[in-house]
Length: 355
Image (cartoon, rainbow, N blue to C red; front, side, top):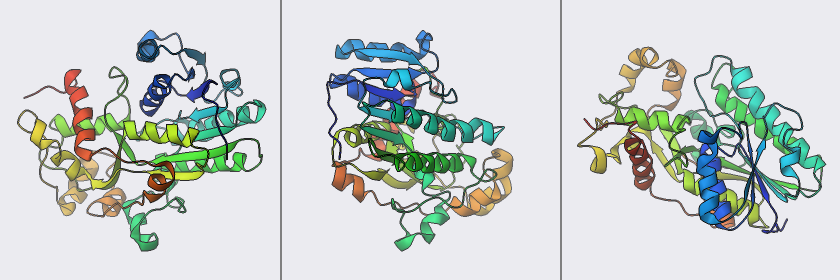
């Protein structure tokens, strides 16, 4: 059980990221100095929104150059910090070389950050942004879980380098984190395990996360003929940031936390956008039959392999979020607000244009 001093700076790795940006904002708004570790601290386009947050909050932010694969790259940024948020990890599904593009940055990056935590004696707690992908690969894994529901006790055993390598990367990275944490006793580890994160980006000019591909496709006509009823969990990015904040500062926080607001599917995600945006955008409102998807899916999108379709379409996704509600006092924003707020940003930025 660790009590973190709010007068001390806090390190956020991958500070320009989707979730990290909101964590930075929450810290700054509470008057906490942020050490922002980024790959390109001189790239004004990538860090301007963070500087603006600091100016509005009248709180200091300091930028440090750090790369996941450079040994010791985070040690300087960690100096004087009692709390470290390690959020930096690639969230891309379509990659050419899974080992190089996903596994190495996720696993070696985590090892790199935590080895620095072992060296910097001020560190008391590390919060790692893991994922529900470290718990499951496909919705069929939910069905096989005790009572058909995912819990923090479950680990992903079905992903591999060849099948769902993103899930595999998150599993290896989190296992590495626990391995390092358990080899020492000065700092403690808490992991936040979000499902699919949606909602407004802190920097609308850098919408590279997979979440925005989904939103864009729901609004640009890609899915106008129908959408697969693909089971998944969804959580608001602002709730994920709040979960990190509480995991850092609540002394009793411990272990893993499933951070999931809603057990849902692709179809419902589209349907909740209908009332506000349905007249102006070709948002899908009907499901694609599974048999048809088995025929056309792999041609329409190479990520829709027969195995992915078989294991996830028309299969319910269920996770138990009672631990984070009870121990960290979390509540979650409505799915409709999450989807509408995220979609509105793409409209405001001209990424989606009304028909």
